[in-house]
Length: 263
Image 1 (cartoon, rainbow, N blue to C red):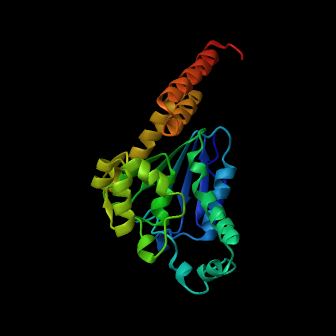
Image 2 (cartoon, helix red, strand yellow):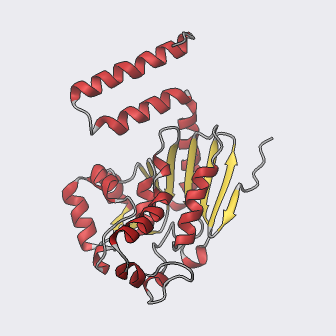
Image 3 (cartoon, helix red, strand yellow):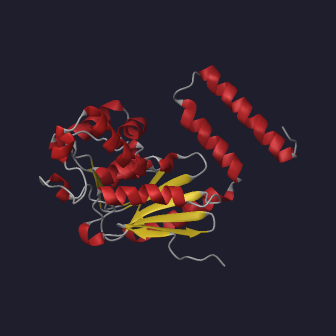
């Protein structure tokens, strides 16, 4: 029987593995799962701790909000204890600032790995860093009370936690610019209509809906899903003929595998 003891439980992040499914939970509902560098390091550690047989990763937040974004302490002169403050970063060299932000971004990158499918279950507020964390996942299922917002530009900053590329890919440049520049809320209805979310359901149906989606994702053979995800991820950067060739090569590998024919 699979143990459901946490593989990791620290700094507002809990990772539990149940066979081929892993669940990463943001565990600070009292602060609406506000984010910090410590939380980002824990998220990156969760990605490194995933067992190799995990196929689907669900990301969720405890409480009323998925994540209200960066903890407001970041905007104080002292920032977080032991962490570079915004003032420190402003005074530092370009290479130093780049390295700090690159480390933060690691929490948002591993969800796109081709060997897993990541699903964000989003309710309530998903603002700023919370919005970008949801965008880091392959799929998004949202509750009817969801409120996405990209507030960085309104604060004189830019979205820098890997959210800009998936946002443009999902909703298009013009809508992405308008969402970021205005900082307005995107509701569940608009999220589905614009392609930002795959499904919207009533809040009390969110967990069951995600569970059904996970079961459907696990129904297909793992290697076929991996090959398909890689094909789709690379499609935008390939020409039509390059994509045709990639499809042929992938299908050739699948046929050999299914027939038990070695390379």
